[in-house]
Length: 587
Ligand code: ARG
Picture 1: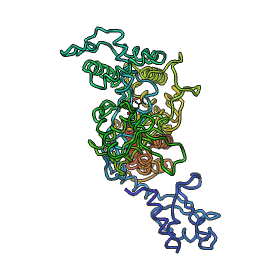
Picture 2: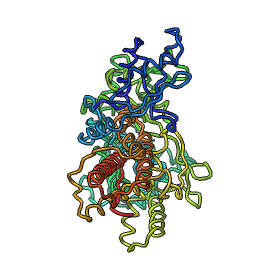
Picture 3: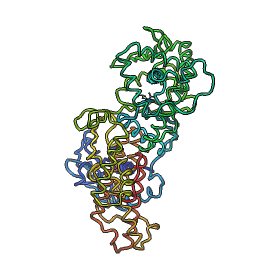
Picture 4: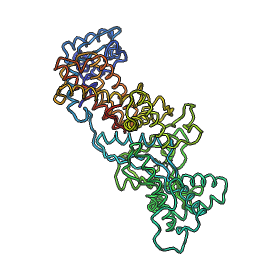
């Protein structure tokens, strides 16, 4: 559907043209003085010089061409030459009715593309902590936005499952249990299917090993040797690694499930291990990389660079692969398997430069064609109220699981403060609401900015929060239930008019869904959806407070209100689903 603002602008452009002026002057904007008008056109001001006329004269001429317009109910030329506009309610009702009939609320879908969203990115053998929250939450929303736009978007977790951290863990297990069959070089039987450790063991082993390797060079050398053995395919090492992977992944899945984050692909750095030699050979054969200071590198500097742009290291000369190596090989494999037209990465913004290097290296070495669009969304940190990285009360790293538990508890209390519910029911509602609190709290911030994780604010039922949005949806649901229980047919209802200013504001907000969503998609900006639903909830609640709905006696009017309520609920629910959370039946 054509966007409302475009339709309005077209009407205005026609009027400029009819009055003998350039039609491009007719661009209309949403008014920044809603007390005076809904929309505004400043074309007469802009055209004054060109036509050698007073702006107010131009504005008056244009306004006279709009008398009797079906689009505007008011066109006022005001000094020094602005055109203040109000929309014809009937025109708005028609527009909102047609988006109501459209299953994507008037959204214009582009040609579908194959896309990969690379998000999550946790490292195996380490517990998920608060630092993993943003990649998961923003990535999931970005993927869902892409899907809603009709694209074939696939999410890949891209596990860190192949580097030194694996060697560290394996080496430490060997120190502790040297007699395990995995370390017996002569063993050629089948390895046990049970892992010789639990996830809790791993959580202790990894930090221990990592800490020790920083102080003890000999220990580190052993870990590197274990990494090398793993990567070169020593059977026992591979079998043990598989256990580490399985145990960690089971734990990760539990955490991501709690966050309603789902990956289509559970690939990792290890997935591309076998294709690395071929890729490097190809790069050498085609002179895409050269040897410099003990490493194979690709120059990625461009003349227009204003910042330093070091070469991208493809491989160390001893053959060891790096983070870059696996990312480049992953691009090669993704192109081969999925032919993506867009790949979106979500990591901490400290990796901005890194990804720029990788993208350029992939293009220069023709692993991806010029048509593949690479996007890196670098996000800011989650801070505590003190402005520093979020920590536990004791000052330790906050585990994701713990964070979810705390916010669940806080939300549970809030629900019980608002109304007493049976414990079970309150707990299960709290889970749904807490998820909205976490996700909205994160997503409503522009990704690149740091934000403060404020448990009290995020769980509040008032203000710019997830629970407030849910509260609004629940309110609509409960009004609809009451109307239905009163014996009113809520199924066969249609918008048939616009009865107040508050209702008009609500309709205008609904009418801007398509423009908002297309923009959020193009700019990969979930926060714009949050801002939109916050405004939508606000205009809805204003309408609700000013309008009697359940008690309305005029059946025609009531039917129109019900239709509007249903549409508002659908748009809100669609948006939160895209953001990755949902609303309870009551709260
Ligand atoms: N595992 C990485 C880290 O912890 C994040 C992975 C991001 N994705 C990627 N394709 N490099 O920093």
